[in-house]
Length: 165
Image (cartoon, rainbow, N blue to C red; front, side, top):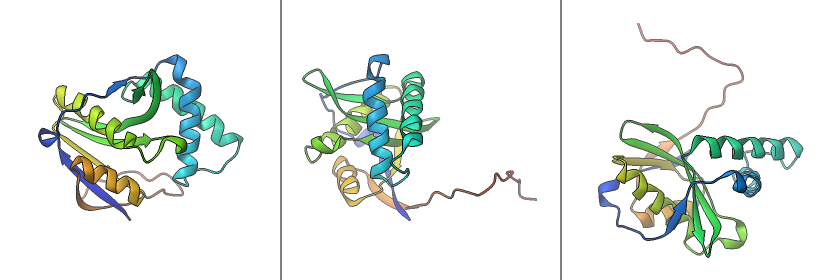
């Protein structure tokens, strides 16, 4: 079970980092990052199908518009995305810092700036789950509070949702 975190965005201090949405020129970089992300979280095998899936996800995220890139000296150095948005709540996901750039606070910075942008649009609460202790420490440093557990269940075959009688 993964730890589940929550943050009320009113408590989030301001941050001056530069973020931007990705454009078509970022597709190759994002495909590489999504491939590495899948390997890092052990969600995919290192194969051609994983590379293709990463390219497709990069194109989807560029079109979707919720992903943000942290920019340093004109170059993307980290990313953050929202998996879902409902009313005034977002679920954060897709946070990634390339291996060579880790341990410099970039994950924390891109998340905080991304959430400030969301707060300015009227989002009040963010939730996320952390899949490793380093990520958990970064989220806690921003102010996220551990509120429970989270588990993803992947079913072997689709199941129809049923309304309780």
